[in-house]
View (tube, rainbow, N blue to C red):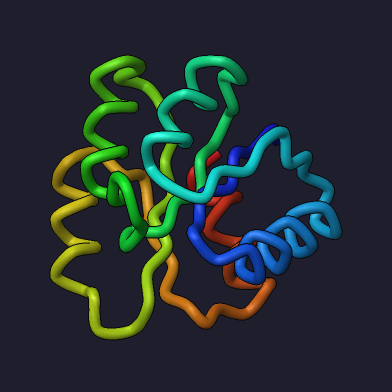
Length: 117
């Protein structure tokens, strides 16, 4: 699966990329904020976006809404830190296909991707 990874933390992007590549997926782009994510989504047309909720410039929830306006069938997996469960539920209401709580185990991330695809 071709995936766009969106997180303001370079470390988290590297961790997610490593897990995805070991799981047989291809990371076709990385973004450090939501504005960048929207632009890359339009350019790259990934099969899945893994997106952090809390980011500078434009947050994950706003980015999710914009991506879904552009591509209503987009698959977006939200990623959040512990304690943001209410935001995660709101993202699901807006159209996110799933979520994973950080820190996560590699097998849980891969399982969630399988459930979405």
